[in-house]
Amino acid sequence: MKTKLFIRNTLVILVLLIATQCTSDLAKLNVDPTTATEDNFDPNFLLTTAQVSFTGSADFSYETWRAQLIHFSVMMQHFSHVAGYWVGDKYLLNQAYNEAYFIEAFAGGGANLGQVQNIVSVLSISKGRPLYSNIYQIARIWKVVIFHRLTDIYGDIPYFDAAQGYYKGILKPAYDSQSDIYADMLKELDEAAAALDPSKDAPTGDLIYNGNISQWKKFAYSMMLRLGTRLSKVDPTNSKKWIEKAAAGGVFSSINDNAFIIADPSNGRASTNRISQVLNLPYEIPNIRWSKAFVDFLKNNNDPRLSALSELPPPAPDNNTLKIVGDTNPANQLGMPNGYDLLGGATDISKAPGYPGAVAGDPLGKYSRPRNTILAKDGGPTFIITYAETELMLAEAAQLGYTVTGSASTHYNNGVTAAMSQLAQFDAAATIPAASITTYLTANPYNPANGIQMINTQYWAATILNDYETFANWRRSGFPALTPVNYPNNVTGGTIPRRLIYPQSEAALNGDNYNTAIVKINGGNTLVGRVWWDK
Image (tube, rainbow, N blue to C red; front, side):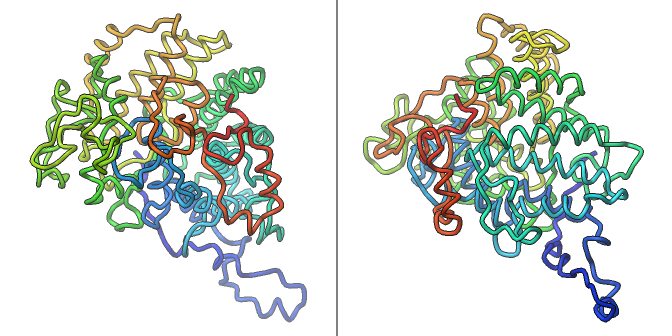
């Protein structure tokens, strides 16, 4: 049973860390014994905050909207959108949107501290305290979760010295190389997994596994598998080493192991599911559509996920409400091509090949939208890593001849089955019958001749609404073979972007380290520059 998410805005760690050590007897007499210090504060509260902050900013899904949705979801052709500010599938540069994830993660916004500061504080408070031994190990793992996404998006970033202004007086942290960051993250996962001990403390602030240490071991090894797989092109030897170590350690074994955080809409905007906040906006509901590439993949393979995920909206004005369910008949679903707008020119959606026409004045009315009652629930889950992903990564490892238990075909079938079955974790109404999954696998059997393509295309389909991960694995694997768009005045030469660019504020606030970092990027600090592992 997943623990419900509760955000407590009072968990502002600057208040909790105001006490300092005193050296004189007089100073000791003036210390309030009820004041929270690092020595007496329970880090469970901050662990909750650190987990919540990873799901997205409470400042109206700031980076979720700009990075996950506006950029990656349409770059990866899961979604399609015609508004000009959805720049991701038009390959236009919006500096503020590009830097949103970086700034929110490192600096936060308003009274909300960033992801990085939150987890660094958990580590500092729990380190060396036997009462919180397992919390410390979980925090080491969670730091990897936070930083692997950051470095995958931007490349070299502050890592070793990040968020050390309070603790070490480091106000201008160096940008560490992605290769060094990955080496340390894998080391941290290895050591933390080994040190987790079910006989010791059971964390009470854990929203994912409710303090189940055995589950956290699986999580650590599953993350190790993800990071090891990421190295497959840039460092095959170490990739193999870490993949085999993760498999031997014990990764996820069913969808019950899936790592996700359930939102609790009872606290309003601060705790509503971050993606749902955006999908439910009145001006987004009529414009967000499934991409043609995604719907075509599902439809052409008679994939039972199509009716679980997709619907044609009801005619206007009901197309602007989520309370009226649309047409879920798979035969009627139609994806919208990426790279179009509503500006009336050559790139207007009405000029797209096969444009189906408008419905009651709605130019997008015949294109399929996400089933919002399934995927846009205010209390819906935010997935972090899933059993489907681990099985598909093991399928690739087996296909490459690595030492993992089970054949590529078995892991592939397990991965596809899990990807379909886990939709029920969004909502029971999305449950896909086991018989339908079996029929699909029988009709679409694993073929070793194009196994890597099949595996990674299924990975793409399995990671909807976690397009951070979709984008990373697509860059690594090259699959599926998405067709880029060539929107006017795009800044990539008509190719799908490979990274986001650093904030301009870094040039002013951390100039020397920023300048050192940008000259190392293969392709420059641009959308087509490549991170270290992207070969």
